[in-house]
Amino acid sequence: MAKLIAFYSRADENYFGGAYRYITVGNTEKAAKMIADATGADLFKIEQKAPYAADYNTCIAQAKRDLQAKARPELVSMPENLDGYDEIYLGYPNYWGTMPMAVYTFLEAFDWTGKTIHPFCTHEGSGLGRTEKDVAKAARGAKVTKGLAVHGSSVDDAKKMIESWC
Image 1 (cartoon, rainbow, N blue to C red):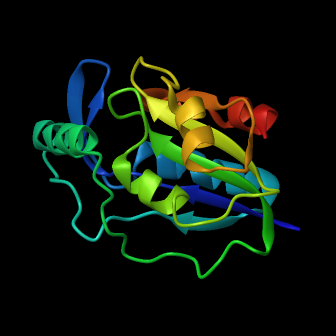
Image 2 (cartoon, rainbow, N blue to C red):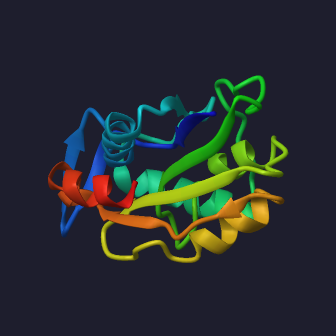
C-alpha cells in the first residue's frame, strides 16, 4: 500500500528562537518534503479556507481563539478517501501544546480503522506537547506511533534525524 504525508504548515512571519523572520515555505512543509524524499510517500497539504494572518502575533492569537472555541476550520480541499493508504505521516506545527484546529478537521473526516499514523511536528521549544494523545483521540481506530519533534528553526539541518525516524 502507498503512504501519505498529510501536513499543515504556515509560511509568512514565523518565530525563530527569539526573533521573527519571514519565510516562503513553512518549517513543517520542509520536514514533510524530507519525509517524502525518504519514503516516496504522496503529499497532501492541509489548508484552511480562511488562513491565519501573515503577522506572527496575530496568527497565534487567532490560533489560540480557535483552540479555545474548539473550532473546526473549513479546508480548501480534502482527499476523497484514504483507502489507498495504510500509513500516514501527519505533520503540523505545535500550537499551544496541540495541533492547529484545521488538523482536527482533517482527522475527524475519515475512518482510521486499520491505519497507522506517524505524527511529526515542528516547534520552537515545546516538542510534541500532547499531540500524540490528541491524534489518537481524533483519529479513532488508528495505531499512532511515537512521534518526531523537529526544532523549526533547525529544520534545514534535520534531514538525517528525519530519515532515521522514517
